[in-house]
Image (tube, rainbow, N blue to C red; front, side, top):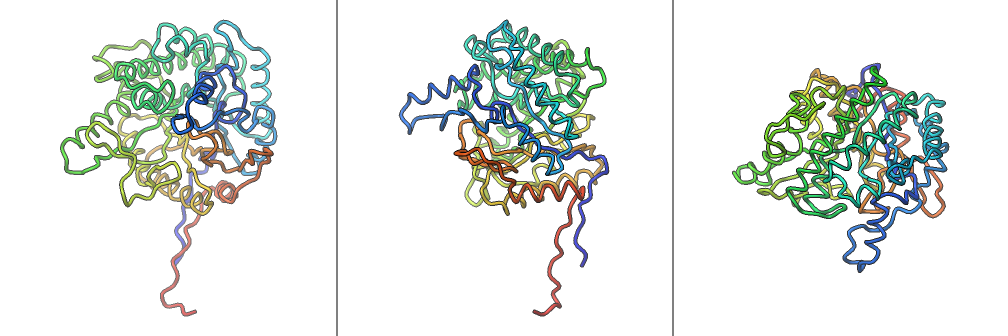
Length: 433
């Protein structure tokens, strides 16, 4: 029996992703830096952030080495972010040296023939903005964000091939203002709504600023489209909880893009200026599925295969999410994050290939998927989990900062080189040892 072939379209983009705060190191003017220090004052058993980021991977100084390793993998597009707090350490102060350094970093990608997909906001805020209410104070934040975006677009825009306005505009509202598992560790439905609406406005305003200066540049969003299931399939409360969560954190954003209005529970159908049509492509971040028990999320249940993050191994969910998104929006899709925290490279390879199979299946169904960005290029600081989780294709020895391409990275390089892969054929039943 011949092995099954998973060949991808000739123009399919293969890439990697990272975020500034998680790899650069020494982002001292960020809200996360402050929270990490505050958490050190708590007893170890009560700390909500495992350890401070500190120097991270020192990517700020070692980007040439990291990008040379990306080139050796065959990466065609890399998705970095820029750190708002580096560029605006104070509200009206632009750090020109930081901007110049970011320009050098993007040029380093270009020299290696790697396209740039630049993300403008990946979870963090300048400390001065966070101290005044952060995402829940739209009146303060939106004009400041516009000024920041205009600065980045002016100084870096000619080096950018694809733009992402914000990363996971549904995750910070959910995790930081509802679930209280990320800073500022609140649990307030009102704060959740305020923050979500702010993210929607940030996206629409950034989209307009970019299109005014670079009308042909594709602008998207990196969206963590949650795959949700009722914990008990036939329980009406679990099904209702799943449907409400699905509406609020998945569908309403894209319905807002489609019609320009914000529906319940995020709004009352009012129009948000500039929101309608503010999307050229959809970036999808996918890792897992989870359950709803009434209105409460449940990460897994006994019998589920989980990763080191505690997330359920569920590749089929990506296929279902891609179909859901294609029904919500006609825009093309790029997978902007997908990966696994593990020290078992055979598990990393299995995760990679099983999710690529689901993408291939969706492509065969006619869904327009233009690329795949693996999270992440290197091991990095995994937010409240610190350095305990290893997502990278490139391993980092945090004592020496030595880089080493993992077996999973080598496998990804072969997939990129072949523009696909073959599934090994099962052994011939008639064959004798």
